[in-house]
Image 1 (tube, rainbow, N blue to C red):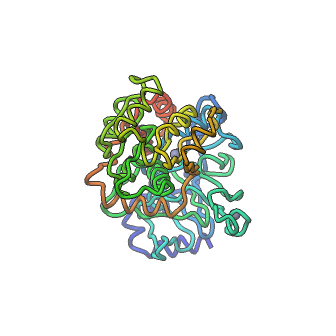
Image 2: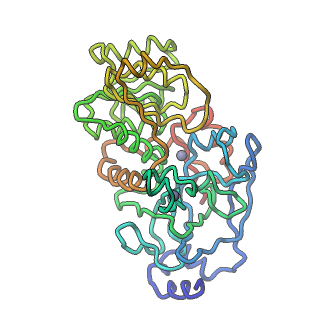
Image 3: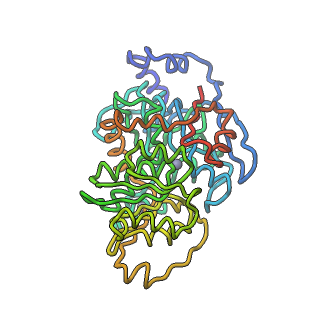
Length: 395
Ligand SMILES: [Zn+2]
Ligand SMILES: [Zn+2]
């Protein structure tokens, strides 16, 4: 099967016109690829070499062009996520060129994705479509068979994380070819915050004319601000830090921003929101900060009968005390959690990025690019918020 797919591909001009694919076909079978491996929480990253992967039937291999370092990777480094099978190859959002396929690789429209195409992929696979969660609850992001690249996949299983020169796409992993108007850095400027922010805004049900408050100015918060505006919000207010991220928030459509390192009293921050909403609070508040204390504060930023979406508490950062009477019942609040994102969010968010990239210029969120061997440095920079978006370019 594998040999025939190689032979079949040799006859196709697009694979021969693309340098890496040709080298791969003609090169020795002992070729190896490098990956950065997180052996355990707070332990130095290791660079390991893997035998060049071969696609399974229905699978594909990507040559990595750019990979994201995101807040989740910092949480993985801190050991704050349960059930992570260390050692892992971190990184779950990436762009790459299709290097090799084993059987036709197709996009969601049914179009063949030829070797050499620049794609990203939905980092979740194995959602079974057959269990109680999938069929009865219709909550695919909670399917117990769901697996996520760079988070629930072990480095012993293969190149199933994206801080690597090549990535194995298992059969069933869905690719999204990047629209012609977007290059790898455009997409990586959005990264996983793009579909996550999109999902949070969809979950919030932002209506025309709403005032939306976003807590947190990291990539999820910034993308939530963009999509809240595109969804019809009249005004978007962002509460976050540091200043560079708040400057980005203004560029991404925030009418006003508040620096939490300058205004450190939550009561003052709640007042700041109320002053801008006729004393009532926001119609929608989206929590994208990762700080549990922000939840209590955010519930006091919504208006009566407002909506609150929690998307920033991806890891367990601790408990918070609420007053059920004041925060929920009397306020007639709608409170929603937002876990991960589905393929639909990735697909539609990329289409929206392609349409609006001239205005929001996502690639400007990429503060710094790193080589693969500089992954530790990228992780440290993310940890201390020295960058808005860190991108690893292996080549
Ligand atoms: Zn399932
Ligand atoms: Zn991420």
